[in-house]
Length: 117
Image (tube, rainbow, N blue to C red; front, side):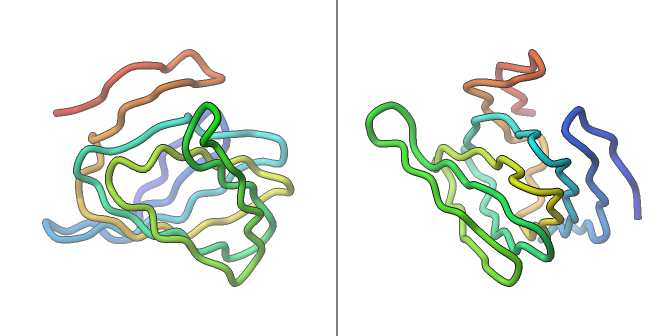
């Protein structure tokens, strides 16, 4: 297992193979991840504790889902999304192993851009 500190909290990578990755994201209350999408990465989120808003889409097509403990969401490739912590929130993420496949559209911490391998 490895811990990766992030400006919004941290992630614990608890499983990593050539077929899947398992992470636990801890997002501090009021913090948010990048508005982003993935070309290949397919992921599912499960809220283990706390509450978060999951923004989906962008512009006029953007809508927000409030997810609470016990709820999940499948995020297919090319889906524009952003997690925003309403409370401190722990999110289990299971995905394909494409960890560098991130296209950041907007970021509160100045990390906009592409991180494709």
